[in-house]
Length: 104
Image 1 (tube, rainbow, N blue to C red):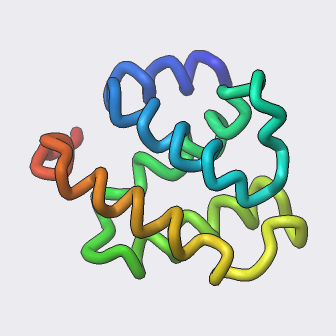
Image 2: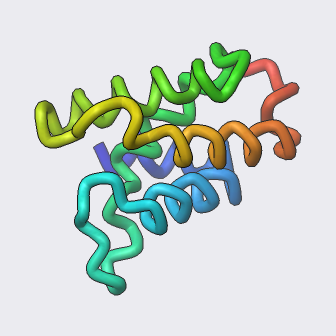
């Protein structure tokens, strides 16, 4: 698992950290204790590879909520809790040079 995360971090570089920071700051699950800044890295690992299939922040919202439901089941809460997060991720993705890359 950590090997896969390292590969995703390498592939996405700084963008991995940006998305992790967005999740940590918005803290949809309530696990931000200020010193555990890597807490959302497993979710970032599964969200990022799916961004290339997204065409809007609404698509990102579906992806983010699906991934949080996989990780946290019912504790993920309703999709609306992820609206701001998905918009921030979408905006960062649009500014990123990664969105135009073709992944193999």
